Image 1 (cartoon, rainbow, N blue to C red):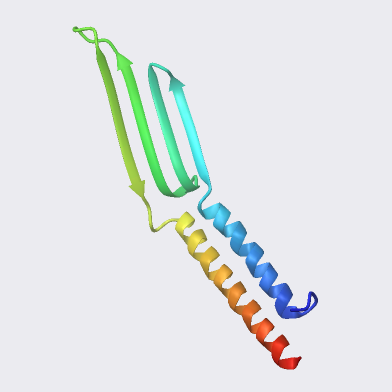
Image 2: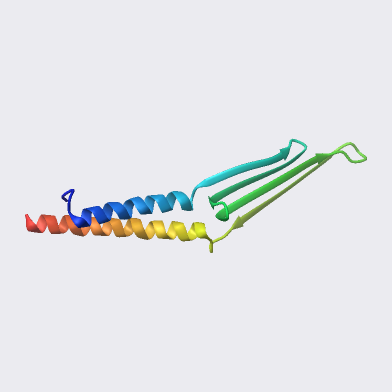
Length: 113
């Protein structure tokens, strides 16, 4: 495939856009808030405002009458209807389109030779 054919440029642009959307759709994030006695951790995959996967864990260490009290809570959440999933699906479609376009361009180049 020649470097200057329109289909080669379109395939490259589709591939670049697909990679960018893939990075946006599955970008991890980890946030810790609080002090050691009362701590909150949040781990997400995807866009922070609408993540594909979210894991939150809170821990609170304190003393009760017996001298020990540790409270941990943990929650998981999968959001399949989110902007992160839309970005992931868009990335898959763009990458598949890029590959199909490139394959057709290579077939045309072989037939014309």
